[in-house]
Length: 144
Ligand code: ADP
Image (cartoon, rainbow, N blue to C red; front, side, top):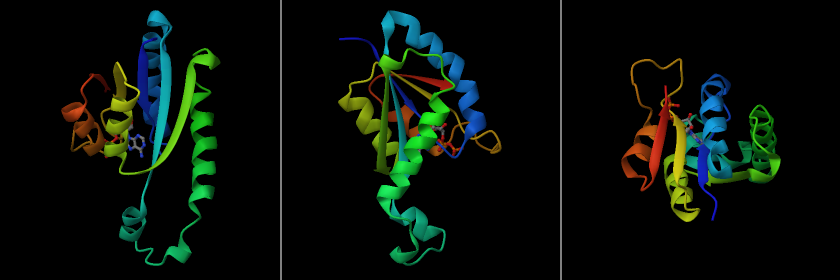
């Protein structure tokens, strides 16, 4: 089985992705690895916390998924990796839980993740990145 790399992408954050690209490209060249890009749509409690109390105000999940997928594909088009080794995954839920679940199920040999959003400087490791570093059973490359 080929080496498998999992790259979680927060589609709301473009700047962060740029820093990750060169690391992913370099790792993807080793043993012709398969690269799995994953974006997680935060589920309902997240929107509720923004004050959107009624489900009627929420866009349909199918719509959100389709939008997220095209945004993810747009971001991934910046990566120089052979197309037949790129895989896309869109799920809904808690980002950290879904990233860890996918790392386990692939199973991933390596997760490449950004440490945090560039505009948040108080913490050197965001909550999703921290959980992945702590709980993943495989190696994790944290890009700063
Ligand atoms: P911050 O709170 O500063 O955004 P995070 O730990 O949430 O820090 O984000 C760090 C990295 O975790 C992101 O660059 C991305 O790789 C991953 N990540 C965060 N949210 C998601 C998401 N919704 N889907 C996929 N990956 C995510």
